[in-house]
Amino acid sequence: MPLVPCRACGHQVDTSAEACPGCGATNPGRKMSRQQYDLIVLVIQLVVGTAILFIAGNMAWNAVGPIIKQQVNKPANG
Ligand SMILES: [Zn+2]
Image (cartoon, rainbow, N blue to C red; front, side, top):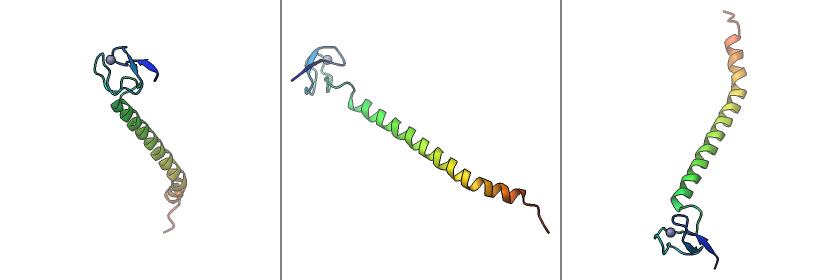
C-alpha cells in the first residue's frame, strides 16, 4: 500500500487509512475531505444549472422575442 502525507499534518499514512495516526484526521490519504468534495459537486451543479437556465432562456427569448416585437410594432388598423 502506498504511503502519502496526511493532508492535515503531513504524517506518512496509508492511502486506505480511515484516520491519521498522527492527528486523527479522517481519510488522511485523500486530497480533499468528503465535505469539500460534496461542496465542489454542489457548486458545479449550481454553475451548470444556471448556465443551462441562461442558455434555455436566451433561446426562448430569441424564438419568442421577434414575435413579440412584431406584435408591438404592428400598426393598429382600427
Ligand atoms: Zn495527520
